[in-house]
Length: 275
Image (cartoon, rainbow, N blue to C red; front, side):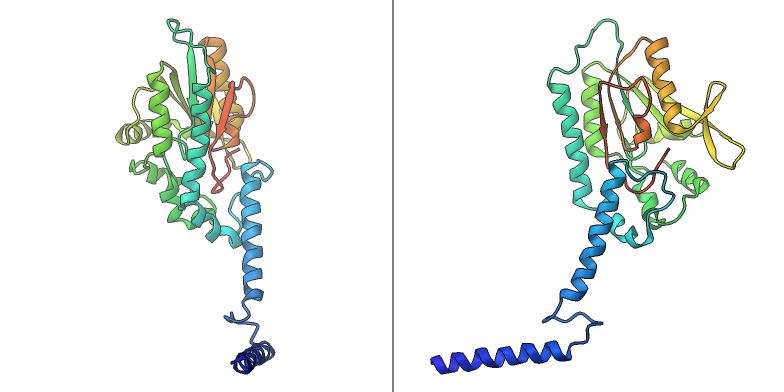
């Protein structure tokens, strides 16, 4: 019996050595999978690192997702992990809300909360799914035509939090870089998927800055998105007398500048960068 076991072990060893010697390293082999798996693992690590650094705002101003990471980003944006990441961000918002964060003044009606719209209240991932998950440069005309069809679904976790905020008496302001010409379509889409009772929808007017880039205009000033949203908040605070307790958005430009909120909550989005 012992001799038989020894023979089998020796035979197996010879097979493995022979396989290694004759292996075609250009193709995956069940006995020697390490080469391709290391290459794949390296790319996965690279793309995950790229995604995380987008979320940390270390990578800024990108026009497209790196081609080698398009499949990875697409898989993430349609995965349970993306949903779990949103849920965790919203859970932190709820904990902040339930932790005595906001001493509502009640009768004066000046306690405010701000939400972005795209990939915060509703998802435009279905559009990007048909357009290479950020791997091709955005065609704004095409995106706006899609927006006009009112097909953006609600992000369920944000919808529940929106209703919680509204039920507690906050005034809700929606500040978006969407164009003013999309106002009726935006409102219709929001109502269609369950959003009701916001106080004001603040949209932008776009104009050329002389270099071919579209920028947002508020009043008589032209500005980038971050400055446009900061100015909108400033008007709420200084002219409206509102106290901004929180902001939920998927872009860092939703939080930049002053005045800010007591707390901000960033939702994940490696598909595009709005500056």
